[in-house]
Image (tube, rainbow, N blue to C red; front, side, top):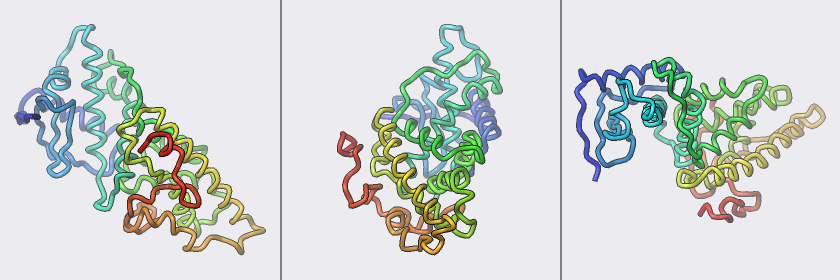
Length: 305
């Protein structure tokens, strides 16, 4: 059973974590700071925890805290890098505010975004923090990492690059990040075809194929499962992009989509606040991003039950 020990704010470890937390926020700012300033030593309860109710953070008394605020011999650099990685990941999650209407889909996406941010920023963060000898420990990416990484690539391009879009996602509350990705697709792939006044409806259409029904289960699966989900999203997203291009071609503007075309997406996002106002409905979990006709996706059929 996990046990928690409060770390005094004037202790060297607490002060070092506070410094690292602030550096992480400065490097890639989030949408809000959830950490309440309390830091706990975590005994027998994993590497780290963020209390979503109080905002307190707990770090492993064995695997994280001993490697902060001190030099270690070269044979312990991997352990220190793992501790610093945990600090950066927890700082990233604590920097993302959470909308009350967020869903399991959006929480899985946010977890993946956090892991992508760590993989992208770790070495620059370590150098800036005064740990230049550290490199990111090698590990197998998780399912949410693989899916989020691919989706970030699919939504980025010449107008909004991958790194810029990653910063936007970190700065977007959990529950609104799918809309931010859809906005990236519009800016990079549909900016010339879809008039500004119709981009809100276009984003709502683009969110639907992103809401794969396997998202809530991806944290428990490996990178192969996440890539499979991402590939299926890519197929649906490319199809929707082509539909929108056709519908908004000058020769077919009379057939522009109406609000009724968003019904599938609205089943997921009924009530979800959007930073770019593409949706306004709260999700009804369970419908998932099923294929047309209501059939299950391949990822579900292949074991993501």
